[in-house]
Length: 457
Image (cartoon, rainbow, N blue to C red; front, side, top):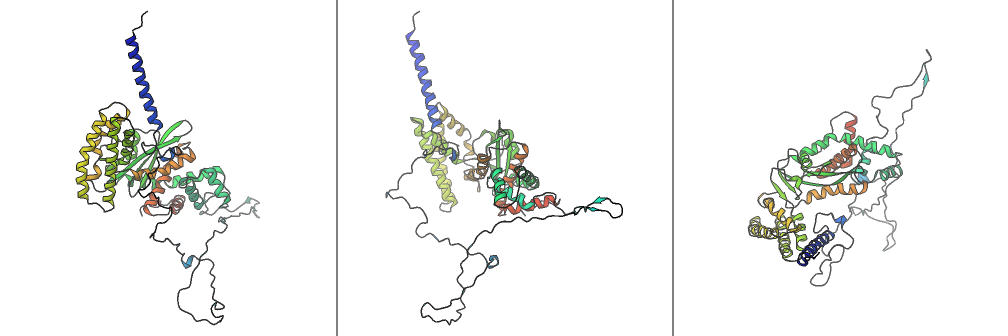
């Protein structure tokens, strides 16, 4: 049977074109890092980051404090915190050898030396002798007092375990080791988990308080990261935060249902990335320009005309962010900034439209950004709205570090502990409160059936 050479050549050319497109896609995926995608910096391969350009004079700044930098001397502790005071008076003058001195009424020189003594736990033992009744012979012993603690480990132990596992990202085994070897508290691995559950129950009301505060402000930052639920089930850790509070939620889904649950009755301006889970939100939005700039960098690394368009978008995004920082720092007037945006906005949208006219994944990225272009400029017209979602990314980083060390949670009880400890810890730091003291106060109130302490009191 005769072979149609033209048809065969066309088939081979089509196959080569498909293979070349596939190779280009794989090369783009291979070149993805934290600078041109939403991948975290921890996922970057060693040596993958581009080298910084040398300064014009060929010299790099030396490490350490720069010339003219204000000194940061160690502050002395107050005298009421000094346990051992040693006062030394001169015995002989190093100049003339005499031994008589007059008081100058000047403050003395002070040198402090700080160390940690061996830590010993506060152990209370209640002894109840077993007695026989002299009248009837009944063997008996005294009941425990009504104010006797209900648990072996007190609120200080529970709060410290909360700090270790929920704030410092220490594993349960290492927390057990530290409690046993450093604090001299003999505790089992199961008891560590039980203490976490007690703290979680004590933080129920403060967590709801943080969640309500996160939903009640004019501006909110939302983000999410993966969070394994057991060995086979993939879940997500969601966050909604503002300047006053932060609230976390563990959910099986990354979709719109989970986004709606964490947002609740929030009605302010939502700052987020372009993840589709937030698309059902009907209020005002601001897309993160840090994410957009990374997207533009990915487009700029493509060959051909779309790569040139991506470079224009990437450079313009850098100008916009730089100008915003100058406004924030008081170096640029708001009116001047708005005039610049009025010139840059049509340029950026025109280049997005040009990038969207091509085929392929990168053109699709331009099309997606162009469709939601009305959410790019909210920060220009609404005072207080930030153009980036850095606030949420800094908060969710705590959860990322926890996940990397623990590989998620194995139960709903563990997920609840994660939500409450992360939320209360982040909100305490925003309010300038001691996290460990708040944990201890919350546990004390819970065990005494009294109202939980307020995060905002």
